Image (cartoon, rainbow, N blue to C red):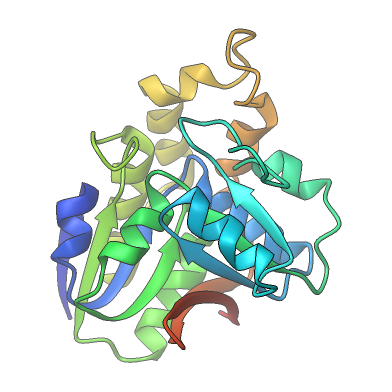
Length: 229
């Protein structure tokens, strides 16, 4: 297996083979929580206007996501795993738009298949990729707004790479490194109430779900669904 580590939007554009697009804070932690709550599927788009249009057309039931960390006008939910953990989304199709994760998925046009990546999804994602016999894997850490590298996404990329290469990385070491990073400090900050303290806690529940999330290209849409590990 040939594994390439890349970052940010250029990394997503250059992804080949099986791509893992990583957004730990918070997009693909939120997606994992939504599926744990019974969501049927998630349509991934790059812009809030696209999400609202798909909802208006009946393609999706609810919109979730963020622009500069805050839920855009007209959205049903923000990009908060804690918020989704309290939401009734069973059987629903969600439309998801964020500035990093979903933009990265839409940019990965050269990839043969795409998985969503976060720390809660790491081990199941590696297991699915190994089971499918992937020969080329591109692991892309999307970082802050797809514009600057962040500890949580870079550490997640290394963690998944080590799993794919047969090593057993230490989740507690990864958690400690992420907690010391700059992006972790905004959670629970009274000046930024949209970054709920529980979001950080939930994002660091490493390998806590029993499914991966694979993206399917269908009728011009990017549709994510869970796959058992």
